Length: 256
Length: 66
Image (cartoon, rainbow over all chains, first blue to last red; front, side, top):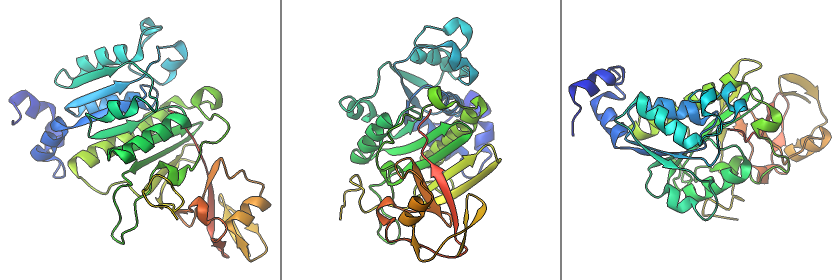
């Protein structure tokens, strides 16, 4: 199915890019992305993927909008307080691009429901706010071979990576997964509610995650798999470091 | 030997592993990753990975917020 005149105009800036073009735009419209967490990271991810013309975007969150969300969750307004995040975001995203199929999953991710949630999707985006959920998502994406774009924020800091640990690099070493970076959850809960977060920083990291999703779907550029992007907002510096598979990692299929 | 940690030059006695560095600096390994010359050191290699003079090390804090 080709693009109609309205779609050609809507996605014109994508079509101009040699890395995207018509074939890339078609891949985007065929793609199914699951976004877990409709919070600070989830908003820019959802907005840019929907604007980009992704085929299907699933939204997973069981929370309701609160006043303290509005400092960074830009799809919400004061009249939305108390309403389901997923429901409010679905309505706003439908207005942004009615061609995108938004699927609402008003629930909290747990070890029992994760496999069912991710089954219909090609790419999973982790914008959750706690380590326990991050491990559940990582493990399921590894087991079911779903590309995982993972982002995290805290205070003035942000991190982005892509995990597909069922694949190996050119030397035959498995690619890392989330547990290669964070082997086990730290005892202290390091979420935004306890540590604080610059609202705009979630925009920076969420936008980077959306770029990586688009790259994975279209094949443009270099995957972040095996690398970790670190943004230090206080110093205004960004760097990308190598992230290696850890042989002690239980989620890469091989153990010492 | 002089090592750069989080942008600051620090003096340590060689030889020193990453594990020993964390102990000397009293850093909680459960909350951080160690970046050595732009590469995250796998946790299982902390005892075997040695730190050399002029190495550039960054302590990367785990963050889980969304």
